[in-house]
Image (cartoon, rainbow, N blue to C red; front, side):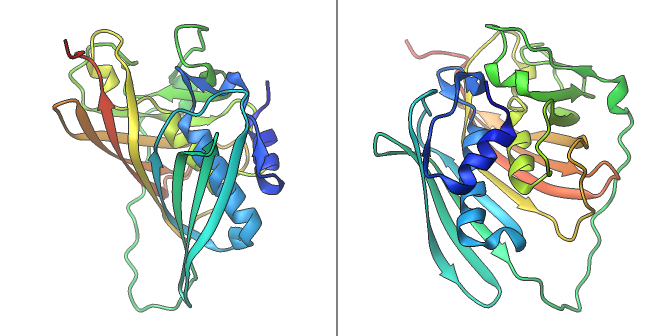
Length: 268
């Protein structure tokens, strides 16, 4: 079993390696680590890691098989004075499993400044319930992350609340809290619709976008970030969710949106 730092280091220098089953999520590897490894590979191979990452758009095209070779690749789509856009992919057996488009922005002078609103979470992470790791009950990757709910309801609790809030970090933190680490943690949260269901049902992300807010205060490797996510609409087997991620000091770090599929009623 390897921690997140191990895979970040591999993705910086290698194109081909396998991800162990401790990062599993059902029949697939946890999608957040797949996206995070593509981003890490892009930044290391292009030298863009010292630029501001402004946004990523992810498409989950299939299931990543555990303990099987993964191939990371990238291509620069456009490179201008202000913006560089790069597409990265994770493939298995020649098939695209996860695709990620990253947009890097160069800092420029501007007369326009609108400060994002800061928040103070009502509940400190030390007072929150952590999602427990129970083998065979929760996804395997949960053993690597520390998710502490402030919104109260775990998945399949049958709540009528349409928001999921809480604190997040890695149990075995990487040496630096990179954008890739933030990306992986955001996707570690179960889809916000799951607490509304009263019994287990499969759900998965189809598309996912994250916008990173700059400038931002430095992050320590063991910091806990605060997460809020709302269901904007759900019906006909799909849900649209929108969330925010905050620095421990209350500053906005990122905005996130997902299209989620829900299979709570199987077709006959």
